[in-house]
Image (cartoon, rainbow, N blue to C red):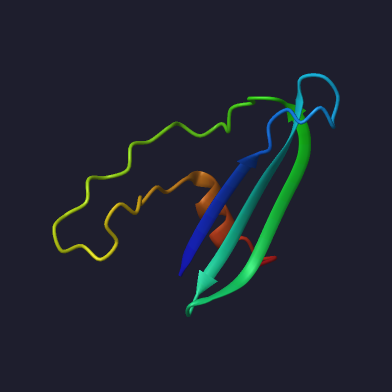
Length: 87
């Protein structure tokens, strides 16, 4: 089982008022090779609003690792999503 978190800041498009941007957060719960749940949150926020998560450097790839370059970054939000009963 895995949880994929996705954050997208569309930037200032002059569509949401001066200095504002549309920001989207999505979480996907995946197991058995299929998506079983999706949670999304979308809001207008000040442009360049930080995500709230620390920036992390992805681990260096190991020779022969099939997931070269893939980051294994766990967050409290991911643990909460996995344990949520409504999913």
